[in-house]
Image 1 (cartoon, rainbow, N blue to C red):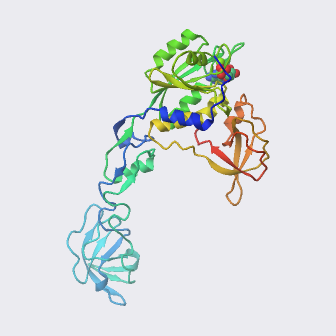
Image 2: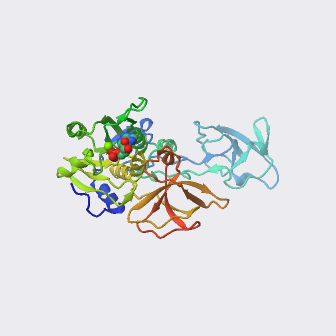
Image 3: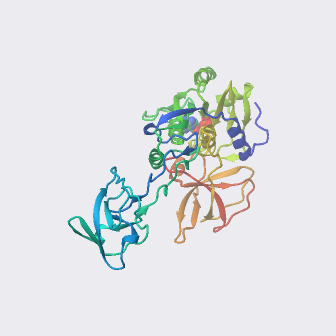
Length: 405
Ligand code: AMP
Ligand code: MG
């Protein structure tokens, strides 16, 4: 097993992973079950909204040509309520009582709000001349039949689902959820909630990855933690190969107990191992049979950062979503030294000044064993290889850490 090959640039690693991901199939789902799922088709409205010209207020539908300059008294000839349209045309010198959401009768071109009228039996006096078409919601002004109201690749939230429902659909076609196997490796690991004994630590990567994957719209299958033993690893791999992808943590480096690296380096499925990134240098990618496998380093910060960068892109690729990293500029609140040959992902806090300018402050301690600073970070500052020293006030690129992650 050699470790002296030049390190692969992060962008190349990312491109290889994205390119190798199988795109998921599709399935129809009732809208009631489609929250958080990814649309596999553009959604065209089946009906217009509103379906007809409707009133936006309670009042009277009138024809402006019937109104004199001062006050006008009109005969109330009927009522149009939501769900109960008045289907006849409006007659000369008459008005139709109308309520919010009700269809505008044919021939009416203005709504007089209730507050601008006085009633006497079946007659209404218009006290104030209404503006033409004021308080009339035009047919299709929200969306027209045939309009695209949700695009392929959209992750469906409650509002989008309600919009799709209002456009006449009861089901949508979504991407099938990728099933991702998670295997944590390490003799030292005990499950969360177990008090670690001498030599042990609590395994946190599996839990992190399960949550991350679920947030990304995948189904995580946690295989728990397995010891640093080739046979145990092979058994776990043979079970996990039915998944759409396998993610391992730990055992990715050059040590003699780093079983994932040994296994991948000795087979023929290795695509790359070791990348020019900090944290995350020992990253492994390849295939076990047809199944892609991503080997993350065991340090929780490395797993976390590689999860944000590579797992996010892999799942988006499987779901047919845009895989472009969601980076943006921010101003540095501190100085940073020159960078070496590895792309750095610095944990940082983010704040905004009165002008709305984002300022990013790199934490002092960036050791990949410092888990707490990862949990406290709002963003990662991306420092390209060999970046020159940066001063407070310089613009840098950041990767904000999405909420819930
Ligand atoms: P490894 O990549 O196996 O060399 O592990 C690197 C470091 O991460 C070691 O200190 C491990 O104890 C720790 N580590 C490995 N796996 C986990 C895990 N699942 N949860 C928390 N820490 C881990
Ligand atoms: Mg280990």
